[in-house]
Image (cartoon, helix red, strand yellow):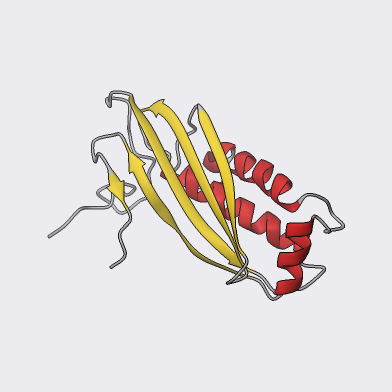
Length: 161
């Protein structure tokens, strides 16, 4: 019929997955999403004219911090030793969107997909927070896993359906 949920026991109780017998493998995950902003915000971010400071610089640090705190925020996530985290941005001025990309790497017994997704969302929320005094009409969209490698399930690449 399909795959079963791994975060529930036979009685339907939420549980953390037991990874103690799994072999560590090198794992990566990249996630993305964007925030649609108005032209005034796009201009202010591009020109560095936000009163709170360097929006993308602060959002980058926030994304990295979010990655490192994922297991504190998502109940069934295992704490992982993050070996690399990169948060990058693309400014799509034509469509007034700021795209965020977060790539996370580790060697461990479980994947870093949740960490990459949390990094993206934290960076997007930080952009919102730093720009909301200009205009609160911002929308975060299309947050998703782009790619993951490692582990028993191997490689995943997002493809539009």
